[in-house]
Image (tube, rainbow, N blue to C red):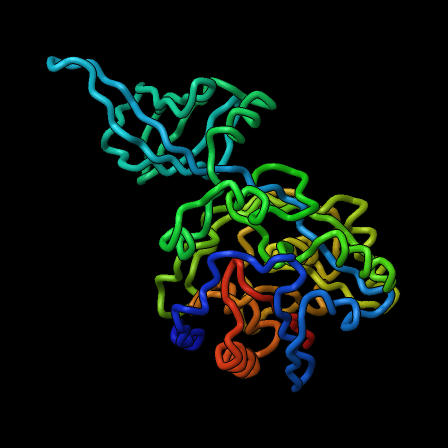
Length: 348
């Protein structure tokens, strides 16, 4: 199974840099069996059945991009260097692993100042990353970060424009609850309160799980034999309540439909035994063709990057040839791609 099997040509103009407004006005490609239907997200209730269960990731994206400076006293007096930081993963007591640019401009023990309220000391450097000790923790840290930080837009958007205040709303789901993600569960960005009410009226049920999406989600696959790729790990939790709800839906013969690949990866991690159970911890599950799905019956998701692990995941669900046809249709019909783009509903 070669990396090139998951490649396709994507015109640059189809990469979305802003979301649809309102959220649920985005286009929706529905792939059901051999059929493809062009629709809009607001019509999602028509494609679902009473008793279907949508699994939603309630992680909250933190404004993980920080811009600051470090000061240094030398023979020529005080000098400053501009430092850019992207937070990656929290540790204990205000510590974070982070990407620091330029890393060589900061010495161990030096302080980076981001605002009057927020600063961090560089503890050590390891394998191109840094460990930072912030001067605040808990709710005080969250408040200072909200003021000083910017949303960590994906590289393919950040290359086209800088993050702004609007992204703090746009790049967050309406049900975001548990802080910790540095990337959004983007299929969920299409949902607004009007759509949620319409789904409830249809008899669709909801279960919330948490997977803190990490920056590793944007890492490229570097091996030609995709089975040799090593996935990054992300922390997730399926509570006892969530597992019971999903199990009851499966037992009743109704469909479990994760919204987004993050929710799918998490419930399949919790269902490796064949039935879903409460689960908490780091998951590095890698889903590619040949994978046996125990929990997910379908998937709502955005359109993914060529040669990415997410292309492999949707190919595992629908079949490689079928996904190629779906993506050919999406490009031909000029669907908008990636995090702020349009959606697909994949019904095997």
